[in-house]
Image (tube, rainbow, N blue to C red; front, side, top):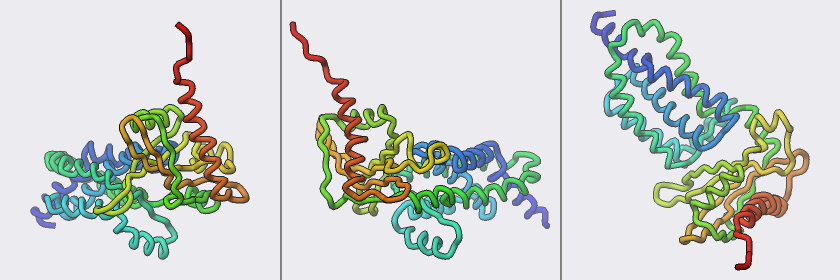
Length: 297
């Protein structure tokens, strides 16, 4: 090894062995193997995007340098991965591999790209960190593992979903609800009732729908609920809705329901009735509790 190549390797090791990289690598592993399983929500999804981009970009920079071109390539690949353009590749991979990969189509995840130029600037300043090469045999394999694992579907969760959940689409059923609340107040009510609400954009860059997903606290496919209760028959897993705000009024369109079942799956009408009793029944009860009592002067 020449002096020049040794100096280059010592410099590039600073892209994967520095405090920020090690922190993001640790958070990514904890998030993907624990937090997503226990409390999968919008926050854990965004956290995975940000930390994953740091880990992935630093790993590639170790081999190819951290030029601006690399940032552009990673950004383009990330946006394609988060769009429906990646669906043919995912289907092809899943047919050939014993592992199943997936991702959420959501253009709003592009916000995480802000971390790329920030991390490049930071890691270039840490290229002089002393004695960092001794950590490479540990950090590089962990980086490869975390990058691969972040898109792999948990086998237990995959089996549970395949055997005990069913999704119904209502996009062509014209199932609408009118709510006398602003969109902000409606989302706040859902939060009070214990539903985590995440937003995603489905479609393509020219035409897409903004979908809000309601995830109950006792989500029937979460590891915690499954280990404690088993398969809870006909409980809601997720509900996808489209919200259209008209001032202080809001129109909600039901887009998709995913429900759990033990032996016999519920019919589409039964799933809808259960959703209306549980979600909208709780929402109406809450609205009645907030109504002012009638009184006399």
